[in-house]
Image (cartoon, rainbow, N blue to C red; front, side, top):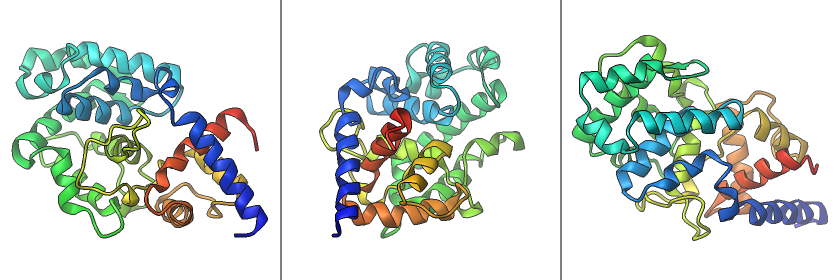
Length: 256
């Protein structure tokens, strides 16, 4: 390892230590699923919150709080036992382009996933490959939208097979699978190795990755995710996505 490479790795590890800490939780969307103890409540709240995790962080948190209130702060019970009137209450929800009609579909889709497929963990476990969860995301999307739905709602689950970086669902997977006893990510899904996770790549983490020389591809797409995967897995083959904390931290502090 040359000096430049060593210095970069040291910088990244320092940032991971700084942000992969319980103090990170309160101001981050992950604070919403941290309210719950039941596995299914954590899964559902995390999936829905990750789905709206784009844009202004303050707005994300405000809308995530509203979403939990609309679900009576009991996500799993709401998903499994809702009635028509409950769904009508969701019509008022809006987060950017994610509207009430999309949320209603997501509730129905989640119910179908639990009833017919054993929950999201079972799907991702079944369709994981030897070194990736990206094909499993595509399969999950197919199964999720087997229920009646408006075509407009499909855009809210991205598909790596169609070239998307799938930032939000990769974020959800990080929350569910990483477990390093630091208290931030949940590590609920035990049959999937964190080594298969991909970085939740967006405009901010992409900019930092390019400035650090971790990423050369200009577009934030599926190929860029694969390129960043290769680099981060050299730094830590067992837990490459811990460096998502570093990319976030350096993007926030502008320390590069």
